[in-house]
Amino acid sequence: MISTITTKGQVTIPIAIRRQYGINPNDQVDFITEGDRIILVPVKTLRDFRGVVAGGGDSDLELQTAKDAVSRRVVEEMS
Image 1: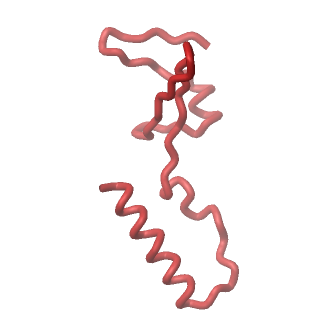
Image 2: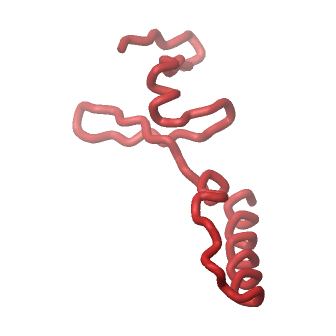
């Protein structure tokens, strides 16, 4: 798919690609260079994985400890 770069250096990612890779407004992407290629990679954070894993019957203390650890990491990422 071809897209045009604006005078401000902006480019529109085609909707089919955004849908396929789950890229939404305000998401971050990383540009990686390999030889003469530029690779655009969606940046995933812990927030993107929220709710992916169901609880497995852990004790309340284990569950709270895990939640606290994830919360601290999310806060660090957002800082």
